[in-house]
Length: 296
Image (cartoon, rainbow, N blue to C red; front, side, top):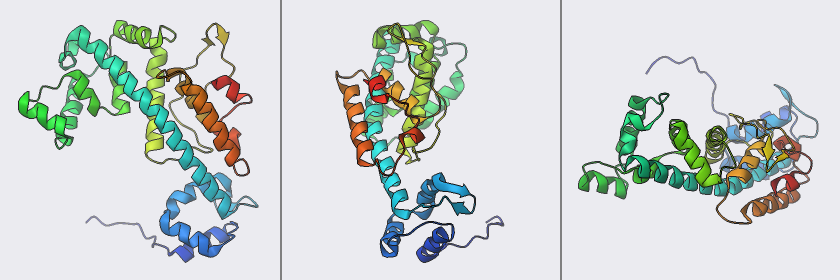
């Protein structure tokens, strides 16, 4: 082992609670708080305490353990709701991208560099494909195609192994005309290929944020979605930024699976906000005035 300069010793749960109190946190029920820290890592919960930091050594007056825990629970519930919509966006985009590319270039056309734009690094792409296959050999359909088809995976099969981020990269690498065909086919020409490219990257970032339990409350996410100037001839009533609402607005634009889905999301968010209204400030999530009307 290489020599380490790390000298910090692990702290007991009592020591962790003492540290929170020393920084000004109000612990209403020490026994309850101790039980929480036995189930939720102190480092994870400390990320939510950071929202209330006055400085590096002190929390804002009135900061309480119970409120921070409520915000943690709010965040967990919010991530779960967003993942449902992100999953459907990802699956529908996989379908339209793979169908469009395969019908034009063939089932194995993605193995040819010529089916992508000149910005595409095909060697790097192929190495990622190889790693995906190697990493997932225990999956039944992967072992089937390796055994029965000499490892030739049609695009619609290979794309099942893609992460959201790799799906976004695949779309970004396509020829301009192919991007336009996908945008026209899937969104009836409502959005430009450059918007779809940007939004896929933003949705991949949000999906990773949610899937890895990162904090949404009072946090910023990158990359910022590309600005939409008009929607149906009407100006968009707010500017895109790195706040969560901009990403939720993109979900509203990209979510087309079923009628009423976006209204359902707005209703779910309103109910969640009402449940936690004593503990959260929706402005910390980048929500503007009239956000329900904007979403619906």
